[in-house]
Length: 374
Image (cartoon, rainbow, N blue to C red; front, top):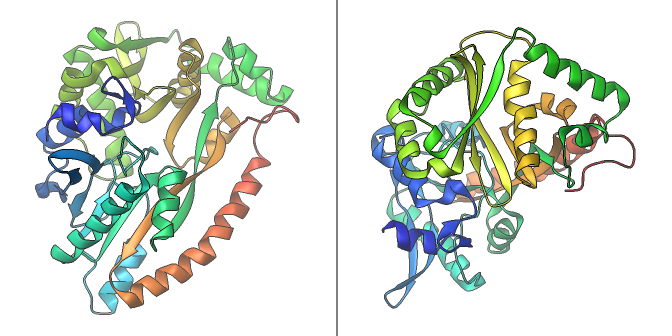
């Protein structure tokens, strides 16, 4: 399937997907770089539903031999089935590899429910053909999750932290919605992060050169090695991003003179900014918060973007003005015994997640009456 056909099935305007991670160019970079291939345990198995010769639905899907790079953890489910004498892998994974950002997976431009249901049914049939234990669609919008659950898939919820733009003209306007103590804390963190004369630059489109990708990859490798032992993405992937979709990327770099010492990559959607990877070659107090959270807010305000999604996990984001939101995934499991056990687990997990979110709301920095609208 070529870029024109793929992107025509993705929600967007004039063939440009609203969500950059659904762009054909993003998947192309993952596969051409060798990051998401059968060799790395991400064998593409994308599902297309057609009416006659016309594609009308798409489900990005991968046959997987592990559960890494997904951010919705099912290791316990795999261990349970293995202990019972079954085989959890291979499984089918409907997601954007290595990307914990909510995006539609049942890609039907007409939004016809019967086609979305056909995509789900086809994924189940494919699982049986490939001897896969299960199918997992992660980081779904509410409406896709509801359709899947209505057809018998198991629903799961989790929590991320997003910042919401309430029409702010400046960062100071945002700070005015916070309690006095939190305002002072953020101002101090921003001041201290750049106190040694560091400067910050936003790099977009043609401004991003190969030497910028070299620097960013050094940052990324440092963080990846500390978090995962081995980074998921390789150097070639970032060059391909620069070649195929640089206009949808902003690199936020911290410089000491002419030397970049830290940076974050962000992707620009129709109405939101998606913060992804970050790293540094020097420890500087509060620089992580400045580059990843405060500069992202500055960029969103300057470009009138409604939301900043700052990636997976991170309760420390609460104090920086990011608030808890619910994320969704759905799961189809062939093995009846495992399916019943997972259903029981999810039934108990959901209220626990909801209680945790209620508790987290109490730690947001907003003044009473100024809580963010979501």
